[in-house]
Image (tube, rainbow, N blue to C red):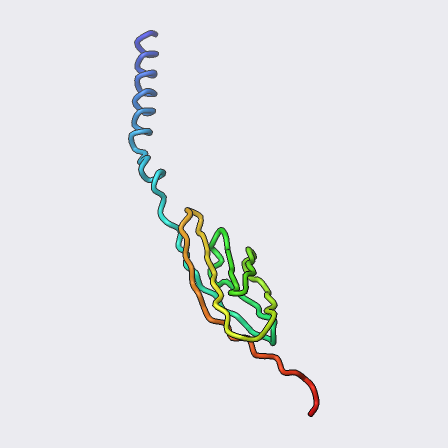
Length: 117
């Protein structure tokens, strides 16, 4: 009986050791980077602009609008105070912490006075 017990324990121990030797801890320590990039589109309607981040796999979004305002939404709507050119930057972070950024110039039309001559 002891001999059978030792054989069973030996087989269990060997199986246990083999299962751990098949693991690759370096794979867990260095995960594959998640595919991600920074890209966006926008629509301008007078002073209102609607921005859409085209990378929906990012884990965070930071928008700067070139007028000291920021947003952390994926697809923000932003109102500019005046017409002009604004450098809008989107910075995205993927699930492993890699950051990607893109800047585009957004032209907001100068608003007319609306008065009559």
